[in-house]
Length: 107
Image: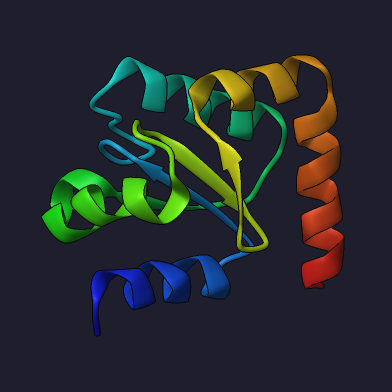
């Protein structure tokens, strides 16, 4: 399976996916840590992918999403954005609504 198909499979399998550096318990960059905290504060149930553990995904994801940095958030297969966008959505209360909508659609 090529890396694009692998990324498509991941975002197609999980309603909310955060591609990040490190894990949710141990983020290895501040931006990933901030995105995790925003998602957790919004009550989002999400799947995290540690891009440091798979160099193919780390190299291929920016081409797939057309976004150069990590973390990267996907909801229902759609790219949402990086850390700043996640934090802005959380501050506006939209992230909580989006997470609730995704949970409802997934149930």
